[in-house]
Length: 109
Figure 1 (tube, helix red, strand yellow):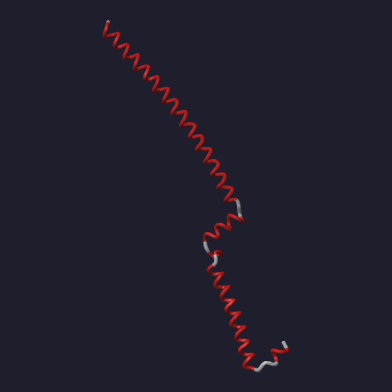
Figure 2: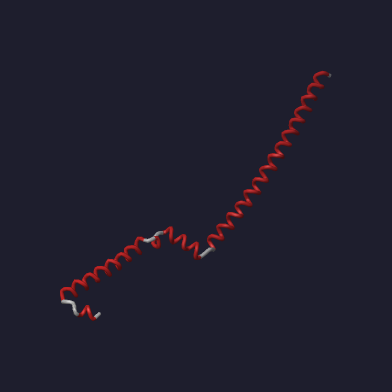
């Protein structure tokens, strides 16, 4: 500090101006970085919300679980329906065959 006081006035002015430019560039660079950073983007806000408040994520997980249960139940119902339709088709084939036999017997008698 004592050596700075010994410098001539123009050197002190240049030194001060240089320090001012360095600090101004740093300050405005940080401000510009904060403005364009991910903090102001909507996607970052949503991610931060999920990280801070996990209720939305828990609710979504619960809904996905219930949807999966419903899909499994619908699949089981569809399989049962297919089985019943197969049994119905077999029974209709038997009835058709009996009717054909009845017609044949009535034609011969």
